[in-house]
Image (cartoon, rainbow, N blue to C red; front, side, top):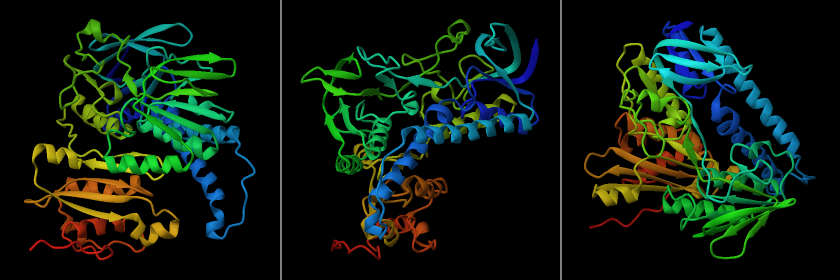
Length: 467
């Protein structure tokens, strides 16, 4: 029987990060992982989707090359080569994680782990053998799995999950995406750019319902320009596979037929079947493990991080939670703070947000100012051929502190970090204004929007001042 300071159940961006930090701090740590290191993020989510995203960008660059003086024609798209490149990228990153674990003295134990006590994990190896790992503290980081819909059961053939779609080696002529949230919109952009005829089915009245309405409208307009058919306010009743196609039935209306259908209605915590019930670990009605701000569960010495907690299903949040959990499991005092969480949607244009939305501030009665700037007035965006989009910065009318921002446009995911840092430093738009930005860059839109909160944006026509 092996004994550790901390045993981590799950090797995704929550689990492996926790383990590395434990090794850096000199603790004896192990990671129990059933499948491949990197979890959903590296193997079936963030990284595969962004590898495809870059392929889509290259396709559109060729198609639009004439505008930039490039005479080229697109002979076709090789889906197999795209998947092979994705696999190489994933393999490189997974291998890098494994080397980091080895370098920090972390033991990797391959197999399915089940908690049998607050300080014990039973591991069933792929060969059928079993052993028990003991640890003074345990961090649960088992992640999530794709959510489903009644009557729409993925079959691995024509009805796919968002985990499986990245291994399609033949480009679908017609693709039906059930769900118009973040994953659904990213898939729609990617496959439409590749040349598929894409239909998005969304039950709500708009796609990207968690974003500002203006952001949602901008992305919809862009997707429709690519030929994506977006149907909102529709409910899916089921699906039937018919040879080499699938018919997605609607509660009201004719079926939507495609070569494949992808169920993109979110993810649910992978909290069942790992022994939580027998230990008395509190889990809510959505399967999320309940934790305090130190990431400790209702059972002392058992911590949980990442999608299985479900506060935010984001790899970078899992990483932050993992650092908090590992430090606390080693006797230090750290607390998780969700007040400033930036995130992005990788469509074209990209969408990135941090902090409050304008509707939230109105609902709470918070006095605020709005600063706006259009990407169409950005020199760098125009040079890139990316004039679509805007930035909106919200700041408190009395204190001046930045409360949130929404960015829609090229490289929004890269520049939202500037706003997040400003918020962490309790800065005002004036602090950004007095910070010199490189010209010409996309980041200048942050500067201009900050100036606009004062009505002083240089490259935007002045708004009429109130007397």
